[in-house]
Image (cartoon, rainbow, N blue to C red):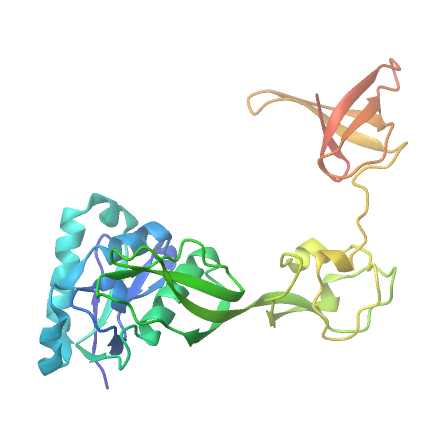
Length: 309
């Protein structure tokens, strides 16, 4: 059994949301000299700033030394992490926890660029966009850089579908490319029974299920977003429900008495007015004060609620 050594510093009350840096027990790295923490780390609940900081922590200036030992001791990695936390206030503010096996087995890839290393880095970047998504990444091809000073440019990485990642190859004027595909899955509301067009969807008609959303045109909804809305088409059992599957109902209807708000966070007045127009959230509509017959305008901010302009 592999012994895990954890470095838990600056523990906060919101520990569940802390970034977590995990070092696998076995890692494959690319054929180059400089080895950084970002080359071997897996990051959970992190952001791009944290990933960039990990890329700045040098574990070995000459990784070729690992050709003989083929392993790291946890003590060496944890010492690098402690030093980085002491020297970098931004990293200390991120307050990450670290999980490191007592021994990390290291191997060099048979190609100049390690596909496993690329997969780790792509996954880390994608997780900053959607921490609760599951990704299946396929690397189709990797180039042969002309030098060992290459860097991946993940700034234009698409979150789904096909991708082309530029490899900044030292002083070379033209880029080389890593190609592949990304499939992404996320918990999505799906139907538990047949729902007929025009029928109102209730919470008990839905369950959350991990669904491939790689080619979904709409954003993922929550059950609370759907409950009470009308189906725009018939939905068979097990069908994911998207915004386009629901009828868009007006938040206010002409002649409806709505709640009108006036003021700000420090002082707010509430009154009842009659909507002179139908509209959706975000629309500006006319309102009538039935006592004075005065017509006002208001922005719809919720169903049956407007804020006077």
